[in-house]
Amino acid sequence: MDIGDLYSSLESILENINKTDPTAGILLNDLLRRVIIIAAVSEFESRITSTIDNMKVDNIKIKELVKKFTNRQFWNMFSINENERNINHFLSYFGEDFKESISSEIKKSDELTQGMLDFIELVKLRNELSHKGFLISDTTLPLTYRESFDWYKKAKNLVDFIEQKLLE
Image (cartoon, rainbow, N blue to C red; front, side, top):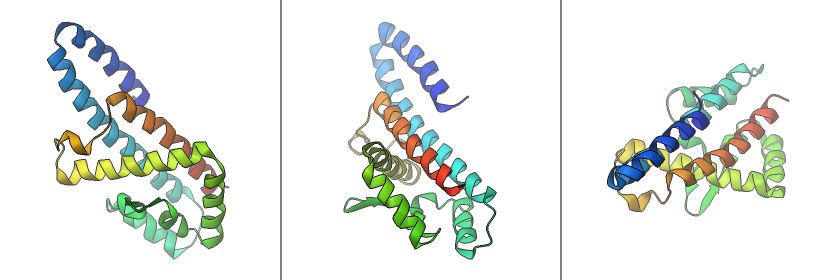
């Protein structure tokens, strides 16, 4: 089951619950958005780690990167603070030319730029859910479950793009 299947299944259940018990529907919506955030970033981490692991290179920086991923430091590879939101730190592990080339392509594409922003926000939110508590206050989770799934789809486009570029 992938995140799309999960979303479809739970959306159907949520619609039925909302008809009979709106309060339970609100609780399920809240839970679903949290699950989508965690599942999305876990998928991205797994995919990127696997892609890097499958690269045929003998580069110490890339090996360090894989080690960071496997030690659950995925969020540390990206700039997630309010003043700077990008993936340049991650890209720099593959060389300055690679970083500049990919950053330039992302900037030229509204779809990739939005995917990067949504990716960074999902990583940030997953980090908060993991470290501040799964049931943190709603003020830090501005999304509905539908919005979190939309962010997942846009961020997935960025991950697809990164995977393609890493394997070229």
